[in-house]
Image (cartoon, rainbow, N blue to C red; front, side):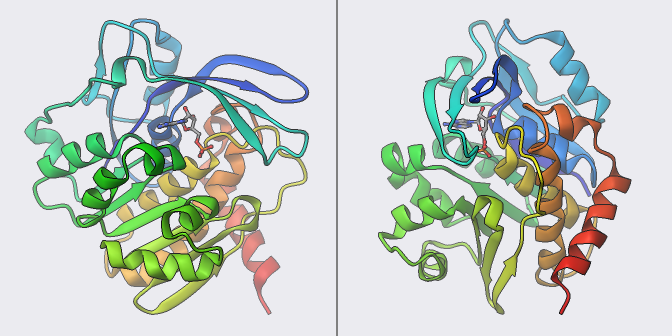
Length: 299
Ligand code: AMP
């Protein structure tokens, strides 16, 4: 079954202690769409400006991503600039220029509103809600968010969450949202806003799922070298939704496998700048890492 993914289609300028990489292909929807494309057909919904390079369009195409919903508008593409500290975990946002996505409220054609799986990748909750309202009868809706939206659009985020099946956010955001230091407690309390499932991402320390049958703890795939973790969270959620869309049946039953597949897909993202390593990965390599991870956590 196919997936609709909406979010940012961006140009990312990423600084690390060792290098500077201006205007790479990035954005929450780009990372999520490429990750999901390993598992299921993907429709990308986004907007780019006239500065968006053709080679990035070709990269989406290489992954078989349907671009019917990708608009080109006059103006600048969303641009994000971030800098990592030596440990490659802590990062600072240096600049966020919303560009053409700031005013963008798309009207979806019939060919997009009938998708069963909807991934509202990280972007303004108003835009996420606007898209969700147009979907006819989605089977499973996942939303990702970040601290910026908690700070400036909390009310809109809470309104959205009433209609979402699964919320994904990182540990500091879960703490901030619930004003609760204990992340396990924060995850469980987040259900009261609507989502049946809450997944808290903890970077290199994996993730926690809270759902009707309790908690599930998933590890991250251990890497010897992290080049650039930008987009790992988006790749995680893309891989997760991709896996669900490719496995019919009970969501509850498939969700643990989906999280592990998301986790492993995200590990490839960290091994190169931007999408460089993800785009070189293969489904076979993903499956191999799944097997390796299984052995590492069996006891
Ligand atoms: P992650 O490393 O998973 O947190 O995702 C980083 C990606 O999110 C980058 O490719 C950015 O372009 C994108 N991004 C950064 N800030 C925002 C924002 N405010 N809204 C949507 N996407 C963003």
